[in-house]
Each structure stands twice: as C-alpha cells, then as structure tokens.
Image 1 (cartoon, rainbow, N blue to C red):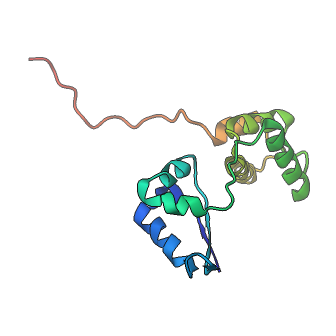
Image 2: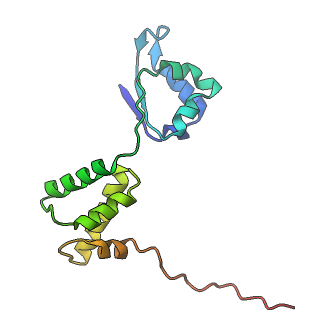
Image 3: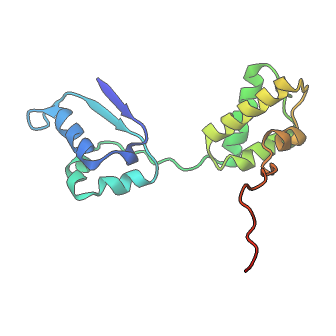
Length: 154
C-alpha cells in the first residue's frame, strides 16, 4: 500500500512519527507501507524536528522542485490549448500575461486559464485577450460604504 500525504508540512510531528512506526516491521527489514510526503519549503524544516530525525533518516528519495520556467509554462499553455482543439483561443499577449502572473506554478496557470475560459463562455468571446483578463480578474472593486459614523471632534 501507498499513502500519499499532501501539505505534509502542516502535520503534527507526533503523527509523522507514528507513520514511521506503522510503515515497517522487523526493525525496518519489512516495509508495510510506502509513504509519499508532499509539501512546500517548510517540510524539510519540519523533518529536522528532534522527534522526526529517525523518520528523516529513512527517507530514501527526496525531490525538490523549483518553480517552473517561463518557457515550461508557455509550452504547457500552448499544448493545452492545442489539445483542447483551439490553439488560437488566447492571444499571444494574454498567454504572456498568464505566464507572468502564475509565479512559476502550473496549477495557478491552469486555474487562471480555466477561469478565463469560463469568462469567455459566459460572455461569448471568440478569442480571449488582455481585456478579458482585466475584466475577469478585476481587483479594483468599489467598496461598500462604511456603516461606522464619523466621529466629530469634541
């Protein structure tokens, strides 16, 4: 069996320590469970916790991923649009904007792309461009008036 744990950096050290005990038998000679820990940059720091040193020494493979490059993100977006059947759905300028705002994160890129697609469908847009991006992700929304009354000086 394989146990996948996402956001492992948020786990209590006691729980991670128990996983070490549950995953093997016969003084680590027999593996009962494979555990895959996935987390952000805080996970290696958590594994340095005094109670987790025995667990840290049993980790066989560590894969540290860096943010995706601009080229990798652009390639993914182009490939996704082509596979979806409309390679020209987004202007080149919009694709650049999405890549720039994805912070090297594939998931964020695809989430923004999905939101733009939903926007385009709702507004019956033939080709998505920067104007659509600004409208879909508008951040300057008017604030409702404050219910607090202004205090007049004494």
